[in-house]
Length: 147
Image 1: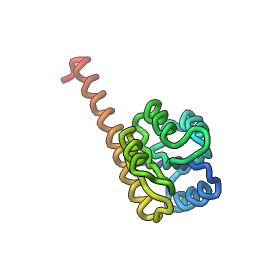
Image 2: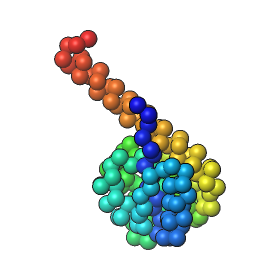
Image 3: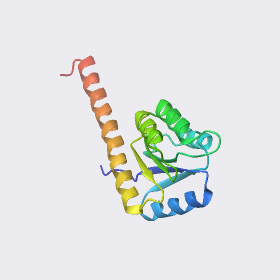
Image 4: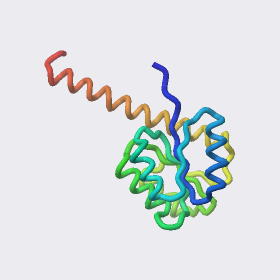
């Protein structure tokens, strides 16, 4: 069975950036959802739990990227998160990585570099999902004495 099309969400309070990046990702064959705040991102993820990767800006009003990352990893632990910002500090990058971000990229980021990171993150998420399914099958086989 071929892998399904990757599902990505772009989260940034800069609407023009979200629209432009989303279009560039869609042209490359990705399904893209958009959110313009951390809270909106969580609402979109509640509806689209099969999202593979979130591309998340760090600096946003209200719920910032670090708080949004913390909440995403708490509620949707398998979703990979790429932090993207034009205002990076080493401390923020370290904090994001400790909270489970897959990687941390600076704006502006070349689309080829971003696509490579997205593809790596999608592969990691889907590999984790596959390992979980395989473990569940092994457990079911053992539980029902089908070994």
